[in-house]
Length: 168
Image (cartoon, one colour):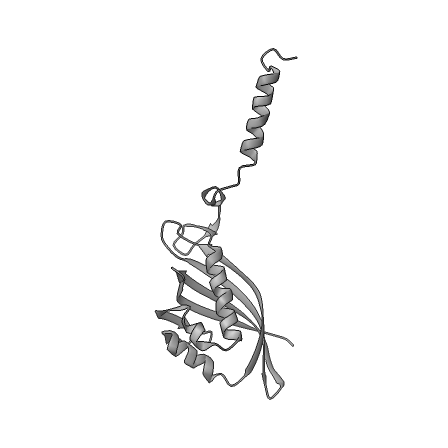
């Protein structure tokens, strides 16, 4: 037996290993970066709260609860649509939604949140939707929509989407 490692020391060492290895990670210990932002800095995972906000937006939109939908956006929110149109404020955005003459069915495929500056508030959520648009029960288009939401303090301040058509 190693004279420097007595049974008491071995037990104390084993206890320390168990205690420290079972300590749950803190948010700061999980902050790893991957990639870079437009400003050139690192990108980190953002908050689950922001992802949940996007899920809530989707649920309100799907149930056509436009009052609830509007409540998720800041009054000064800017919306940039894939067709180049720009809308300022939730009322203008919802007006755009209500002008759509197609029936749209979608499957919310993914969402994740990224933070391009952990020293500043806010993060981005990227979400993807598989959308089938029809008119009078005839399919008009099948497309992927990718949306970006910039969120601070539980409100969307900026939103834009991109669309890529898919073969049916």
